[in-house]
Image 1 (cartoon, rainbow, N blue to C red):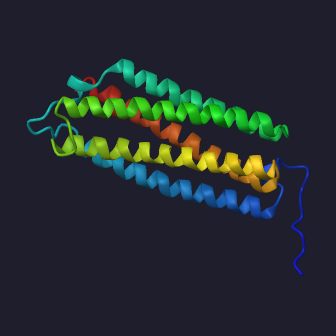
Image 2 (image 1 turned 90 degrees about the vertical axis):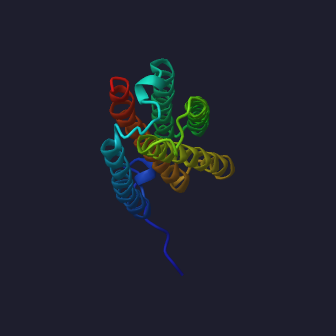
Image 3 (image 1 turned 90 degrees about the horizontal axis):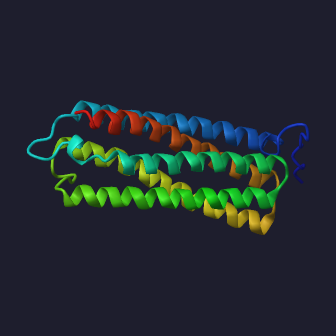
Length: 203
């Protein structure tokens, strides 16, 4: 028969078992691979900046108001996600779930405005086929948006597990890992906001 895994009550709930600590370390390594992925996409974007062919340029289409709304929503969602983990460490399952739900709603709001933005660009003649620049733009932002969508689905599954099984070392580990993932996406967006939108508006 196997032995129950030792629990260290002096550490945060998500770090109390060796399995959890190893899983979290493994996820940090996974995020390193994600950094490489987005680094490649950013490199391609910057190499292809200015390759507009006969299509419109970013300065013609980018609107600071919409981008600021998306940025505010996503950064606020990072804050609510942080509050969720704070409540988790206080042992407050209800607080954890409430803040996760708010994070989900903000994530959905971000996706709504991003899709509206993409539709606007397409109507103005900017698609992935228009030029190399717009191909790199939609690939970079589409990949980020797909990651946000994945994060939303992932968080929903964790909420279901919290509702069914309560707050324990396993669900705490999963909640903590999704919070790392979500904060990572917010950091990527900051680079998109500065490297894509702000520079694009002055091209």
